Amino acid sequence: MYSWARTSFFLLLVYVAFKVLLWHPSRFPYSTLDVKEYDYIIVGGGSAGCVLANRLSENPNVTVLLLEAGGPDKKDEIHIPAAYSKLQLTEVDWAYSTIPQRNSSEALHAQRSAWPRGKVLGGTSSINGMIYTRGNKADYDEWEKMGAKGWSYEEVLPYFKKSEDYTSDGGDEGYHGKGGPLNVEKATFVTPVARAFLAAAKERGYPEVDYNGQSQIGFSLTQQTVKNGERHSTAAAFLHPVRERQNLYVVTGMMVKRVAFDGASNVVSGVYVADTKRYKRDEEELIRARKEVILSAGAVESPHILMVSGIGPAEHLKDFGIPLKVDLPVGKNLQDHLIVPIVFELEGVPVDSGVSLHSAIGESLTYFLQYILFKCGPFTASPIEVHGFLPSGMEPEHQGPDIHMIFMGGMGSLEGIRTAKVTNAGSVLLWGEEALQKELNAGFTVLPGLLHPRSVGYIELSHVGSVYELPSIHPNYLSDERDVEALIRGIRIAMDIVNSSAFGQWKLKCTAERGMWPYDFNTDEFWRWYIRHIAVTLYHPVGTCKMGTTEDSSTVVDSRLRVKGVKNLRVVDASVMPKVVSGNTNAPTIMIAEKAADMIKEDNTDDTLKQ
Image 1 (cartoon, one colour):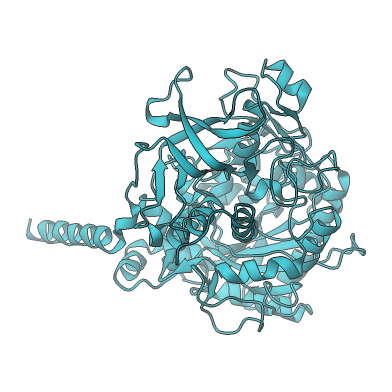
Image 2 (tube, helix red, strand yellow; image 1 turned 45 degrees about the horizontal axis):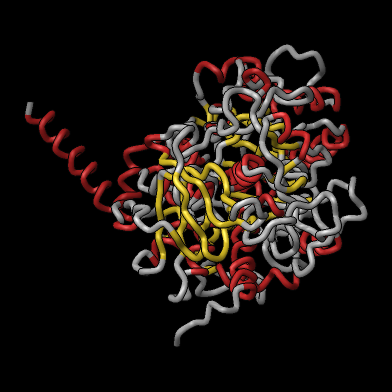
């Protein structure tokens, strides 16, 4: 009885310590919609919206309203870096899924791919893998050549640096910011298998680089948006520190249904909103904007709001009886990154050996106490430990890489794929027959990815129920055979690296070798089949409100991110990217918001600062 009581008391102390040490006053709700008119209304409190809210409210002469459909970022798992995979399919996730795919996702349930996006303050920066990657110099120079004037690498680099506080040693001189709101640091907990992978890459001739610096091609420990052992989302970095500003209003749990126009004109005057807790499609409230409405709802919801508002493809809107305001290719140009998970087992190395990340986290109580008491150990970092960026040889005209290589130091790090409802066939492909029963050995996962997909999709209004339902997502993954061939080249590079002598201390076994497949393992035919079954999204949708010249019929916004054909409306988020960058998209989205904030201030010169 005494032992039981002592154990219970100890566990209670652990729970109280956990709540106290993770508590922060900035995680509680902000304002209510008592005021019905503001200077600027920002729709979406995500990666871009939080940045805009901070920068625009720097001027005390203007009022800024930030509307977020989700709630405040108070969920504990948001702030523990290693717990990010536990956030999918929860209340902080929009929980989108694609329509059934014809050329991919064959091992996923109904051939649908899950698309987690953040429905919470901080948006997807509150639920993602915390990887800070800017892409390649050539990406932004190509944007400018495509008509995005002012968006060359030389012109956007200052905005990357403006937001950043790079706190790790090293880093190429002149490429990183110091003292910005967003903390960026290299992975602080690194497994032995991750260090072996870095050594193996060097053995194969790939340099260790600062992939956000002078040259992207090579490998490195990941740079992460983590601070003091906690996730540093845009809500934590940009929003919470300025919560005392009297001119900044943040309202959560509020859905924007559509933008409002001034009578029959194309002048935007505000937004119609509905409380998501008491959501009724026949109820809405008008909130007015004196200056601008800025959509920062992401690559799915920004085009959705535009189309419901009458801005989009004329024929598509006609099908839904939506009066047309402007005929624009809203929802087109959808691009996303695909990755191919390949799992390796360390035969004879026990799962509790500490060699791999999953093994370490498996000792949950020890490392949990280590985290809450000292903010160290595997809970403090993203399980994505190493990033590589490589040329496949298929794009000789491109100056940068077209293959993305991710290393995760564990076999148990595929929660995102599991939550995508992988069927038994897909699970066997990833894990093998025996591993489905019980994970006995340590291991790791290598995920080659496609940086420049030729397969392009689109987003449209849902034909099921109301137009306010979640939109239909058509990514058209692997509809271009060249994407499959590029991924095979990436897989070949991964297999070559893993077969180097740096892994000689362990006996490796690719779990995909187990089983009876229609093709021999490790042949091109096998990998084509594997890719079409297992390749999954890396959660980087962009491009659905394409930026470019006003004369270009494929664009939705101009180079200053103003929606063509209407006044007082901009889109500021990943949807404006003309082409997906060569890397993760969170850092570029933050950069876009930083640059957009300056543009908005320049275009509203009457907003004079009082000194």
